[in-house]
Image (cartoon, rainbow, N blue to C red; front, side):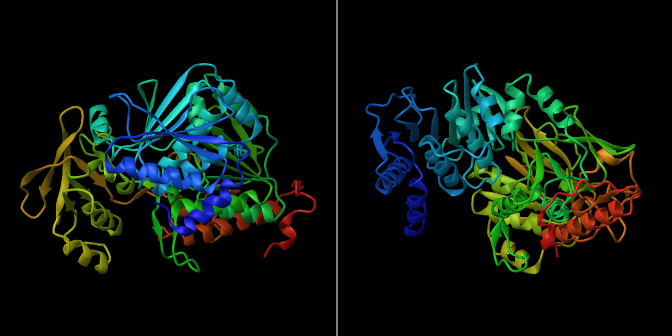
Length: 535
């Protein structure tokens, strides 16, 4: 199951086990069970602290294949399980579960660990995933850590492609889908803090008070994507008291699969780049406040940022780097069937539509790439493009046209998403060349029609374009002195990672110059900061 390179790396990781762990297998005769068994015994061979037990006579209702992980020091039953073969993007989740069950420290602050340990209600989580989903591991790993920290909590990762009948019975059309004690809990990415805010009634109020008690920042960056990370590094290197507040670190890059145009790096993937960005920011004394959504920004003696949780943060300057999100079609049925057949991430949700007919809305690079990827999984893909020409690169168009199960319809304006009340059954579109209304029967619709800037909270604060982009000057400054912006949320053309990084550094330098020119400057620059090495 594992190649030699991966075995060598895993063996090195397993050297960090502090005490013995046991892998309990529940198997049947299907191929996936054979693969899971092979994986478990390969892991056992890599460390003397790992043992494997095959459960005898599993009941007819047991979910198979299943691997449960427990510490031999824990007298109770295993609380972390993997239903399926945790490879692909979930291999990291497996490795971390092994390490944490074996006593390796979790990368959580003490306050968060204590909050998890204090949860006293029985919580049984189940997370339905696809092995190609890049958002899923974050959710799986968060819930695994909760289960390993608290004996009242259990968590099972379930491969939706392998347990398709279960997925269909529950009406799951989007991953990750989390169920708590048998009831739907969340769909899509969710952070550990988000989970705790939902299961711990007092968490939001405590977090809001903690944030509001912070001293004013010199520079506060709103957003944790490439632009925000770059701004944070440049601000910190100037020795400024710097903070980053974001819903999640990494932004939309975390959803990107392959990145081949990041100069000096031939190929990387979104989650890997995000991890590097976050680690680079953490190399400096930057206060990262994740799991927070900004509600408004106002300017008094200081800038004041209000979050959805009710916290008020103060800063002498601001860099907004909130990025953009997928544009929606805004047609009847789209909102109703979002997560029930209408999807925006083909890599995440594509495996749930194995053997079915789907549509991709949009003929740009993202749309045609999605069609090509989906065509390897689903029965048939129909691409609907509004214009009379495709905007995708010619090499992608040639690839799509060479695949027998991809049809491309030009001048097609989607007018409605159809469904039966529970899930998508098709769509309706207008042929713009004839005006005729037509219908297609489908199980899924993947929307790939561009981006919308995340700037709604700024409408009453600064100047925006009709499309909602923040208007910035050559230094990244907005119409409000001291408030800067960078990245996909701005008017800067060409929404690319490398451009966002450059714009983030420029905005931070612009904000630093603004701070230097303030009368009676009292910046809280830190002694001995890494700014001495600033370029």
